[in-house]
Length: 368
Ligand code: NAD
Image (cartoon, rainbow, N blue to C red; front, side, top):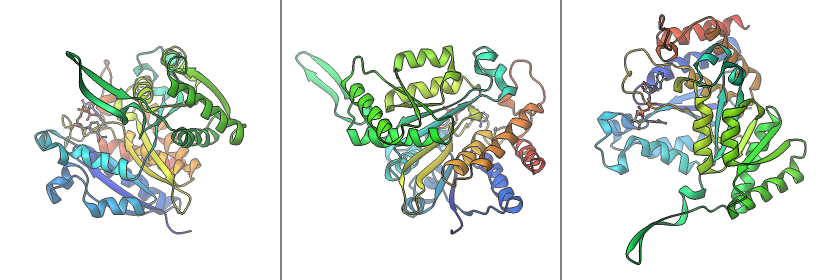
C-alpha cells in the first residue's frame, strides 16, 4: 500500500504554533514506529488571503480532494475582520467542508483524570468520561428551504426549515454505527420524534439501518432535550451520540464543556469513502486562532495533537497508535505539566507550547 498522504494547513494565529508540535509527533512516528506519512503543507484562511487574495486557493482545494486526510490548525483574526464576507478566512474552511462533502462531524468529549477538577461538574461525574458526538453537518435546519424573512400581513415572519431525506439519515447513522464498533459498541440516537416529523423519520431510518446491518451494536433512542439533561446528569452512560445538525451543534458544545479547556478538544469531519476505502476527512482542533495569545508561545497544542490522533484512528486504521498518543497526553498531564489555559485558580508554572510538545514526545519515547 502506498504511503498515506496528509495535507497540513496551519492557518492563522496560534494555528502554525500548535501545528509545529503536531509535526514533531508525525516525525516521531516516522522515526520510531516506521510509520511515515507523505506530508505536504499549504495555506488557508488569512494566510492564504495574504498570499493569493483568497482564503483557499483552487490548487489547495484540489490537493485536499486528493490526499488521505487534511489536518487544519485554525483560521481568522482581527486583521481580517473588515474583509468582504466572500474572502473572510472562515470561508476557506467552509469551502473545504462543503466541497469535500463532510457530512459527519465527530466531536469527542474525553475527560483526562488529571483535569477532572477543571470541569464545572463534580469530579466523579466526569472522571474517565469518553463520549463522541456524531453530528450531521450538511443538512437539516441550517440548510433547508424555504428560509428567509418574509412579509406576512402587516408583520414579518422568519422561516427556517428542518428537512432530512432518508439517504441523509442513512449515511450519518452508518457513520455512527461504524464508529461505535471501533469504540464501546453503543449508539444513542437523539431527536425530537415526539414533536417533529423529521425526528420520526430519523428514528425509523436509524432503527432500520441498525436492524439490517448493525444489530451487533447496542442502539437506544432519546429525545434531544432529555439528552441534554442526561449529558449533564450522568454523561458516562453514553458512548456514541448520533444526532442532527441543530441538536448536534448544541449538544456537542455542552459535552465539550464537561471536559474543561478549549485547548484540549479535537474534532474530525468525515465524508464518503474514496476509491481507496478511506473516508474524505478533515481533522482540526475545536478552538480558533486565539489572537489574544498568538505569537507568545502560550497556546496549548494538545487539541491539535489529539486531532492527529483521530486521523490515525479514523483515516489510517492505526487505532493502537492513536491510543499511544492519547496515553502520552494523559501521562504528561498526570505529571503536572500545564499550559497556561490549564492552570486554573490555584495558578502555578505554565509550560510553553514547545515544552508541552516536547514532553509529549518524551512520553511517546517512554511508551516504546
Ligand atoms: P478562540 O477559540 O480562538 O479563543 C477563545 C479563547 O480560548 C481565547 O481566550 C483563547 O486564548 C483561548 N484558547 C483557544 N485555543 C487555545 C489553545 N489552544 N490554548 C490556549 N488557549 C486557547 O475563539 P475566538 O476568540 O472567539 O475567535 C478568535 C478567532 O478565531 C476569530 O477570528 C474566529 O473567527 C476564529 N475562529 C476560528 C475557528 C476555526 O478555525 N475552526 C473556530 C473558532 C473561531
